Length: 73
Image 1 (cartoon, rainbow, N blue to C red):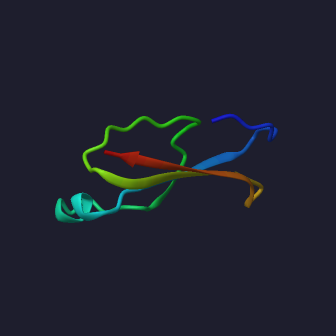
Image 2: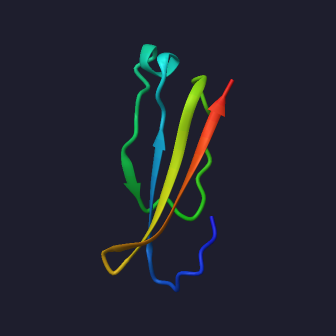
């Protein structure tokens, strides 16, 4: 992740798993998590369409965001 927003700021992430494989394994998720740093690394356990979102929060306001689809086959 890169941004031109001047520090200090907080980074909030959402990793969304969904689809039949995730549902059958009770692995559905999509909570928003603050403070995981500028990069996250995770392994996948479920095939299907998922996504990752990130928000830059400065002074209590979202000032930048991004969304990436992740397809696991």
